[in-house]
Length: 267
Image (cartoon, rainbow, N blue to C red; front, side):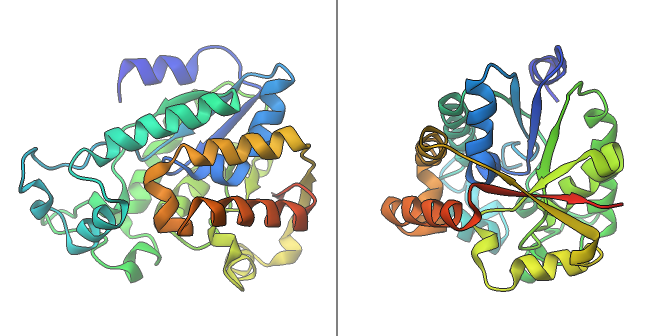
């Protein structure tokens, strides 16, 4: 981890820290609340965990070193070997539009991780959205010490809707550091999939173990979330198809929720 990112994420007390597995999750899922807190004068940190460059050499054949799944992800995003650098720039712009400070921790995305034998840890979608392996859990345990260095009044973390392994690891680490004090956001757009939220709540002890909360948004908060999401140019087509669909789907879920919905453990 770079000294810059450690200093940036550990300096002073934050009114809100939003833990984002990837370079878009915080804005996509909680952009309205981030903007609301920041416009009211709060110090907001968006801390994205898995932002390291792909562990490959530069050059015209660099992507050949990746697994077929990782190559397909790059193809869909229409990005080359410098994909993560581009995505970090997108994230910086998005967080600036929300009024938040950004910190990028250089852990490797699941699609790039390898096991002890040098094989891709998550070479297929079933693995990427399956149960975390032992090395994944070791990584989550390692995050805990770094997260404990944060001085914050409130933490938002992913609920893990959709089951992406990186989202589950960040959820696990946050729970182990802050326990029932953590508030969880619904991972968007995964939460749009029918049954995904119910499946996640069952996996986490059942709906009765959780209490839903609503974060109301005004028009400016909603527009700021949309404008922040527009900054992720590499992600709009893979996630939504078009920018127009992205806008419509964000507006629709905010209208249905009466704002942004959060979940808090009852235990």
